[in-house]
Image 1 (tube, chains in turn brown, red):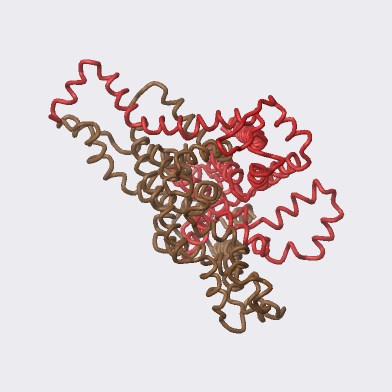
Image 2 (cartoon, chains in turn brown, purple):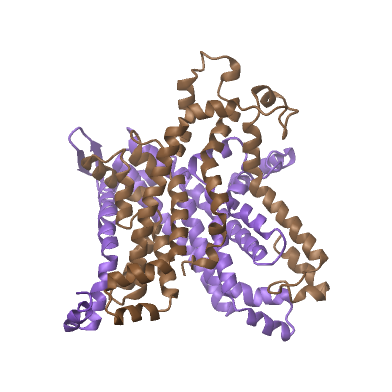
Length: 315
Length: 295
């Protein structure tokens, strides 16, 4: 697949030089190939989403009808009504937002501090510190989770959102290492001149950080908060262990969808059309990612342009 | 007040002052690392050397030395199998994720119409890959290559292969989209490296008569070698931390099982961690000598 667009070009001398760096046309053959490949890959990417969305609109009769593949006979919203009830949507949505936004705000704040310290100050042991930061990214959660859980249990924090906020406050939030590196790269790329000028004017280090460095790092903040929110939203391993019995997030509720469904609609009690089927499950799944999709389409320029705005690479 | 501050520290030397402020900025993180990572890690290791029973008052420890480890590796019928499966699946997924994210990044680095539209599609998975969502989609068969995995000829062909060959192929067919979905961040990382390559190098090469094909292999790929290592490591780590990972699910289920317990699951966690490190080391070794040759 990779070689196709490239192989084509030696016999089309005009487009040779433009393939990797030019800004004029690539030639007809290459353009057609490019769009075909893009459409193919794009379809493969979107296939699960399309499948999910279409299936979630199917009525029970459509599901059983083998003739109905991609176009339901009618738009049936009953699956969504059920899924909304099963997921206890309004409550879980609010707690999901809290559980993902609060820790990510704190993570971004703390990581900016650490990243600034690493980028602007020379001190011994910095390389060790980088190694340890990388280690926090590599160490699997299950290697630390049980003592953490026991600690929270002693503190009475299980089921409390503080169990996620506390590590974030000390820079140990979910995937904090990546955000530290983002801030490190960002601050490293700034010229030091402004900060030195402020220092000559007698500003203290903390004041320089807050008034000179931080405002310039706004893009890094937005990117960190967005990614952190998404990752916290989608994280289920830790949330299940720390929050179970207390706050219910959307993914947690989705994970036990079958059980919750059968509590609401006991299998023996309801007629065959109200039994749990894949359409209801996929409606639940779709409701689960809907807030993220909305956020993505509102903020997509930040997702896709984050490359240009901060050194997201962890070099 | 603020004016005097820098001068007050002059007495202890600029270098020391700088160090102190530096430590000040990373101080929170160091405390957090000790409390939330290092101590729990050591404690988990300690648990793994014990038979741990949870009682009403707390936890009961009975030292068993390396018994938990030998049990996981020798006695347990499932753990080693799952571990091998995980290694094979990771080794299959990583090259695919890398190649695809590179191709897509190369595409997105070009200029064409509707680029924004395609970019939106390719980054979409970053937003939606959570354990339960993936689990539902896989359960409904939405993550296999459309139409391919269910084709009679292919299942027929697979059944003729020995299982150590057919399992990875089957995994590939049923989880192909999943592997692609895990490439979102990698595309971003590749794109940013592509944009950092100096355009004038390409111009110089084309003046010297190099075709775009040649400059791709001689300029683009070599400059991406570090990025490829980062991306491979990132892919391995994300796949290994994913909450639907079978090994993780097994370890989790054993934590609360009567037969298992905290001690046993801690031992398995460390074995898993060790395998993960091994995979990272192998990836690093495989990918870095190539860089030496090309440069």
